[in-house]
Image 1 (tube, rainbow, N blue to C red):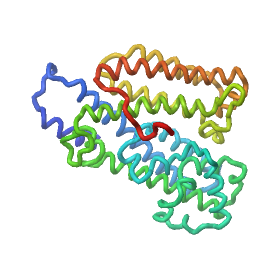
Image 2 (cartoon, rainbow, N blue to C red):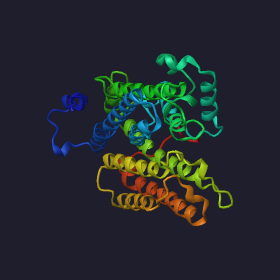
Image 3 (cartoon, rainbow, N blue to C red):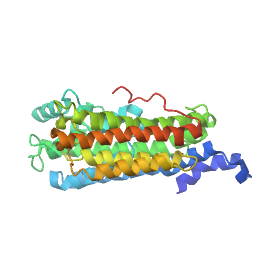
Image 4 (spheres, rainbow, N blue to C red):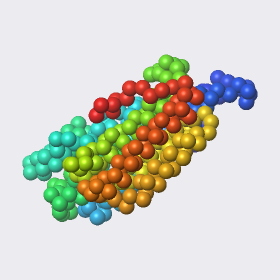
Length: 341
């Protein structure tokens, strides 16, 4: 809370006697989105990734690490839609979650490291510069859940590799939090825009535009990638292309990103958004009813249809958000770094 107060303090100084009649919906939306959505998301991932690092250091074996791994992945799904600032700095977003891995680089790279017993894993600074295919949540998923990798023993090279990946994730989580919530950090860059010590956005309108773009892009990626890649075509469904299917997180990840984007939408919305709320509620309920953790059911025509309908409902959400959030704020979805992936 001390940090949140510090972030808001400059704005409070700028308008100390603002009356309710002088309320600025755009600035109010920005304050809510930054202070009650982005900062908590950053802090949750920092805490969960640190706990993962600590757990793996204590016991590297899969069954010991899996609960902390899933908690960290849950926290990441509450943050990964914010493709901006410290999340993207130094290539962190791909180092944390290299997906989709269209060329199968992760298993090949892991196999090479293990076969060569590459000593880079013993040097955290050097490992932070290693290939993204051997770092992050998806490399760790292979180590914990794939039959090719998960049979390692305590004290083995693979054990130390798991510890190195977990430590690296914790390091990145802590760095994101420090850079986002510092007194002159990215939260302040968003809140003050052109008046910030290191301006990135020329106005608060641009800050809101950026956050709205993150919101819509996350939904589009979920529809087109998390769902689209797995359903493939009617003749050739692709369940093995589902996100995190080895750890049976495919369904959960869609549910969590829907919950995260709904929260961001609520914080940005200058008023009620009944159609968006109803569309989110319906879509989340459809995901919960799937009972298909790894999206394996897309191989069956009826299972594929159920997942496809979720994608169609995400399109409906996007339309309502444009009318109930974007238009009232005077913003629309812009270009995002994940576009075209």
